[in-house]
Length: 241
Image (cartoon, rainbow, N blue to C red):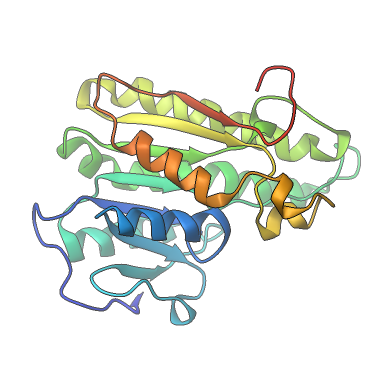
């Protein structure tokens, strides 16, 4: 069910349309605002659409990454409204800080569902539309935990994010001939509620979500001949990133 969809919206070939999951807070919220400011039409997937608004002509749609089939409903509502999908940003994510010994089956399943399976379903549902525009873009918000395992407690989460990075590469391989390009964005600590729940770092020592959003916006604007497969962003000294 579509909620909080105000204004007439873009029709046919009007503006480029980007779908952003988890757009009600953190990186997703800042991304939605940044892309709106750059002229994108934003379709925001959020858990509680009644409590969130981007204003006309943007669309806010109920989306729960744990509910199988929610991705197709959201894509169908977006296409019904705008007639196209040019980009997907799979931003919704969950992190449960447990080691592989302490992480329960249900906790592991939840992280896999939100961080990996839901983005797969979302991209599959939007695939014909991404291909139709000739320059479809997919951004998977992974993590530096998708590139290394920093601590025992981040291990299970890192396993799902390593898979999310591989998903981005798989999308690129599969969609290259159709002009679909994909990027795994791998930030370290970003000053959001998720990071604050697992670190005592001060906000000013972490990457700012506005900076992540600006970099993603730049990636979305690159031509088919300048694909960025991975974008690693660190706020602290790392061996490689």
